[in-house]
Length: 321
Figure 1: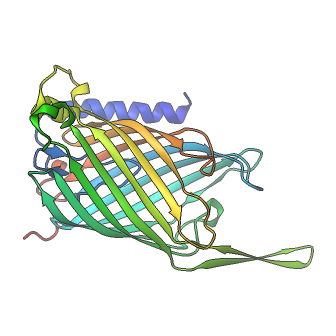
Figure 2 (figure 1 turned 135 degrees about the vertical axis):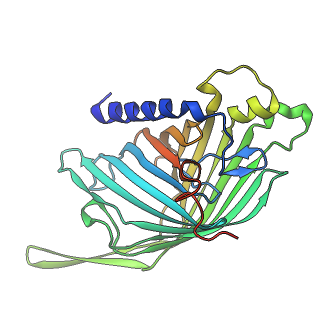
Figure 3 (figure 1 turned 30 degrees about the vertical axis):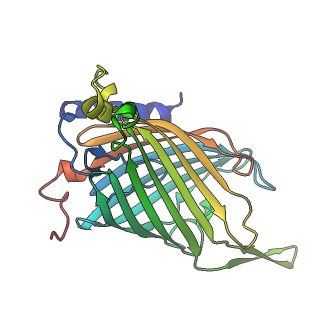
């Protein structure tokens, strides 16, 4: 284990221990009836809340492609979401990239910054269901070209859903802790193509890269140990394991036009530990096919529930009904 992994693990463990004492209290966010939906790592969650992900760390090797060598991609990101009203949230995200190609120079810098707006328009407590809609804006030209930040913007209108299975019949009670969340969006670039002009040996070379519309979709299947213990049957799982939520996420991208290529994405099996004030998550990052390329990586996140930490100040909506 290298220094980055050791430092990350130490930080997560320390924060978990600091939060253990408050895990018995009810969650104030991500709720539909008795169902608590955790903040997922690879796909966005369906609820609106005051929250902070700091940091989210990921690392994996990409496969060689054309003139591009095998590259170690490491990301450190932060995301802050603030409720404008109880059901409308505004989010901001920044990602710092480190690209280390085999046999090449390391490149560092920020990717394009992103802003998102999400509206939770439906919640059914009896059937543990949440539905939301939103739009993300990847701000073109706000990041560093040396790490691949695009010069054009991308707008992604998105639909979000969450469904718990607590309404299943008594005969299937041990399936009730299951829940499914998911997203479906359409990433629309502000420019259909990008033209690059280079000069080699006094010869001007012009290349055109087409920017396709991309269907972004994914889902997360999760099994809530807290739900099992509290609302199905207390099977005696001790702390801290009684706060764990095993999860498998699928994060996929399908180009729709302009010779965008095949579907790519990852499968992310892992576990989330949810306390009263913070959440810790760690998942493997497994490419789904050869088009995605690369080797298995890792993603980990420290997530703060600001609406629980500061319920009377910054954790409140700016405007309440």
